[in-house]
Length: 109
Image 1 (cartoon, rainbow, N blue to C red):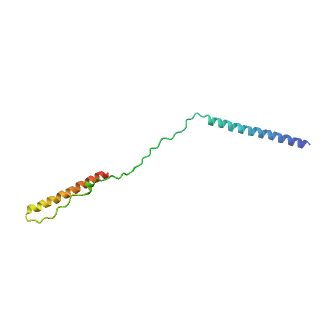
Image 2: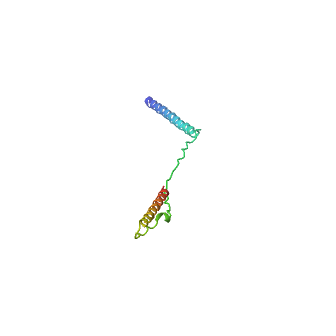
Image 3: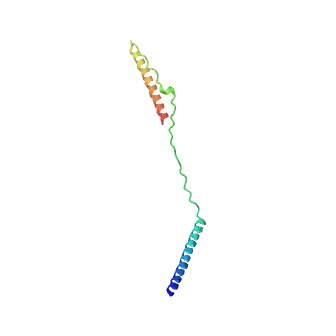
């Protein structure tokens, strides 16, 4: 009988110890919960990210820049001055095409 009584006392003592242990754990969680909710720390706001979008917009090239002057017809030459006039006209047509191509390159940049 003494053994049973002693065992019962041990069991009741252990139950009281467990009850106190669990109550202290619950109390610790409650304290941690309230200290976490009541913190005065400001929220961390990330810095804004700048988004850059590069978009290529196709430019309309005017028709005047797409067509060169007509080549002069090849003349029947009797004099050297007629030949030089023809060469000068060819030179002017080539210069016109170069200038137009230069303008197109400027538009593309």
